[in-house]
Length: 66
Image (cartoon, rainbow, N blue to C red; front, side, top):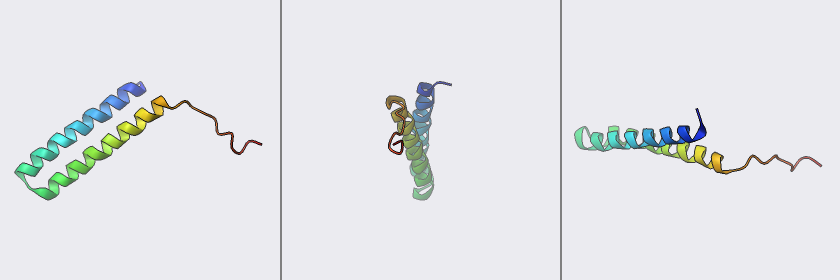
């Protein structure tokens, strides 16, 4: 699976977690909605991290090579 597909799936999962969080806030209350909100935020961070890895070239660490 390509990195672009992985990033897209992370963002879709994040969006779905946010939708479930909104539903939970209105139906059951605050505490269960916060859990889904945190999961959505975590997947949003995973997607951002995977996306930034795509943009960054793989530079070799030449700091310790002297």
